[in-house]
Every structure is written in C-alpha cells, then in structure tokens.
Length: 79
Image 1 (cartoon, rainbow, N blue to C red):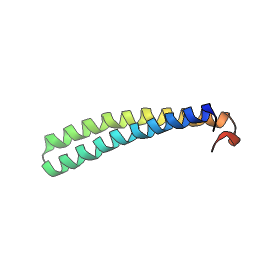
Image 2: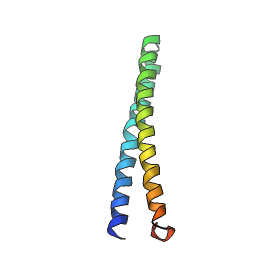
Image 3: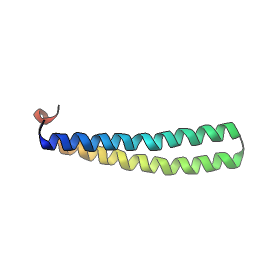
C-alpha cells in the first residue's frame, strides 16, 4: 500500500467515524422525542435532526470527493 493509499484510507476512516456521530445523535433525539410524546419536544427533535442531516450531507460530499480522487488514480490503485 502506497503512502497515498494509506492517507486515503485514513481519511475515509475518519469520515466514517464522523458519519456515526450525527447518526447516533439523530437516533437519540428522535427516540427521546418519541418517549416524551409532547409536540414541543417533537419540534425540537425535528429541528435538531435537520441540523444533523446537513452535517451528514457534508460528510457524504467529502466522501464522494475522496472516492472520485481515488478513482482518478486508477482502478488498480483501489484495494
């Protein structure tokens, strides 16, 4: 594995870790709102969840870019 491959793998690893954080936050906020059952709690959960969705989209865009860069290096470089 070349230095570039290692760097790309490391960056993807960090991005995957970054994906897990907002996904966990989304799940927790929505589960809490469901348990509370009040309208205001649901509104807060939805607002917070939309913020986390924006964060997830940003991470996904970075991952797509990383994949495009890896693909440009040639299919033989992907392991």
